[in-house]
Picture 1 (tube, rainbow, N blue to C red):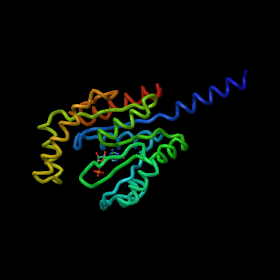
Picture 2 (tube, helix red, strand yellow):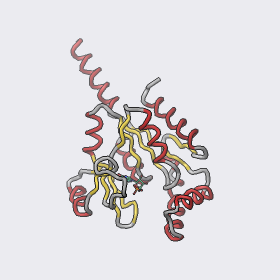
Picture 3 (cartoon, rainbow, N blue to C red):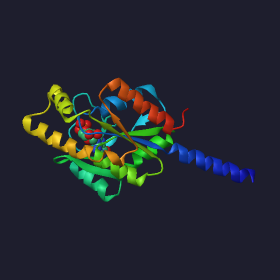
Picture 4 (cartoon, rainbow, N blue to C red):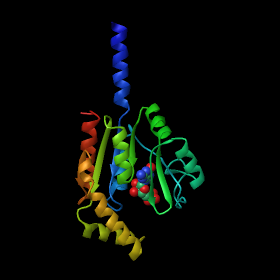
Length: 204
Ligand code: 5GP
């Protein structure tokens, strides 16, 4: 009896450990800043490193920011069913969450935090409905999002338009998430996200 109870307790403990957090948002809504805030503060959380076929940016490190790979290697992994989800987030650029990455982080006793696009987030949530907290970060308005993207200075007129209409489309899915946090003030949005995670993981 004792052994059975212990076994059940262990199973429950393991299941509890296998939780994951998704932070998603339209591009420019601030999800990366919020994710960084959380990862800096809580060593129990760990960034889920995605696979990507785009070129690394100057500061980016293989295996830390992404597992950078060729389109061929990426497609081979699709064939092997190595991804929980994958998307062509930008024209010709593929991104995906590897099953092995979540297992790696769970093995380390960490809760993975996925910073992924909206479609990908919906796909992961479908597969891990019972152990996922999926948070949608909403920009305060399209006008504000446009201002933020302009201040980044990385968009031309065409890509700006593409991003804005994509953002509008993505916001239409916000009802599918566990929590929607409007990022009109970054510090407040960070704290609201933090509170939701603390509650979900039962840290209080
Ligand atoms: P960037 O190229 O700027 O690093 O990322 C572009 C977008 O791809 C961001 O919105 C990021 O959240 C998203 N992304 C990163 N990794 C994944 C992933 O594994 N799956 C999906 N669906 N999107 C991802």
